[in-house]
Image 1 (cartoon, helix red, strand yellow):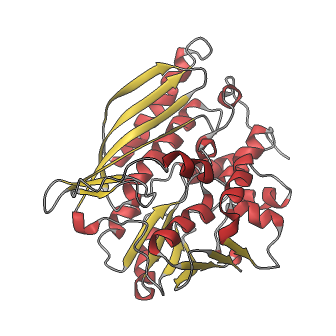
Image 2 (cartoon, one colour):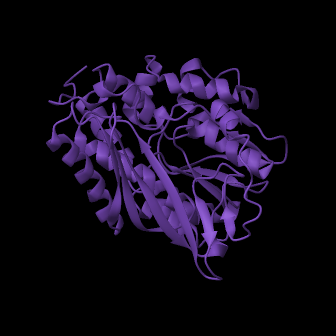
Length: 351
């Protein structure tokens, strides 16, 4: 392959995993959270742990609710500035996925101070600050620790009208599924770690992972948008399954309609995949039905952890054109219809 990505300090060498591929697998996370009490005593907590949604939402009054989330991870790329940008974009995505508007953020920083130059750490923070500036919000503080592996992310705070919160458990039978960003970030990260990602592939990866999902704020105003989430570490299948389980519906998707990053598609066919893709599949395989023509590389791509992935929208058929128009107006050229929801047991069929 042509020009490989080179940098003086290789951040990925300092961590055992990277990006949303670091997330604890869905099956293990479910066991960890199983004993936590439900927040039923707090009626103004509109969204909590009950539906595995993207952020918590707390009603302040009849017209305002606060959205709060935190997201951080280890490096998915070697360039410090790009790592900061990706991590910040990913964290803010949870606000947009709830239909909200971010208002400020706090930085979460853990760095091996004895291993990384101060200038590298400064560049990570600068990348995050640049994304927040693009989102129109300040980084108003944060917390830092000396840790054995580099960690960066944000606590993100947003605001939304209580009646416009877009949960992940309100899909309706007959809804159409729309995905805003292409799949393949995990595949590209696997190639990068092996030194086999081209300059073109790296540029595609950065373009996707640093594109703010601000369309979510627009979609909050559309009554025909019934449910929304963002596709991150649990992959397309994992996050769609959360919609199915929360809404008590089944989903049907068509692989050929799912947008994929061009370079990632070719690398996936060549066998590139992350370990997290296997962990994801092991966690939810019993709820997935694959058509006989779905190849193993396609299955892995559907389980590919997406760092700073796209919004997944479940909307009424009559709202499809408006939803796609909103995505395209914000520069999401890959946005596409990928399937539909129907009555039935909470599962996904892939054709």
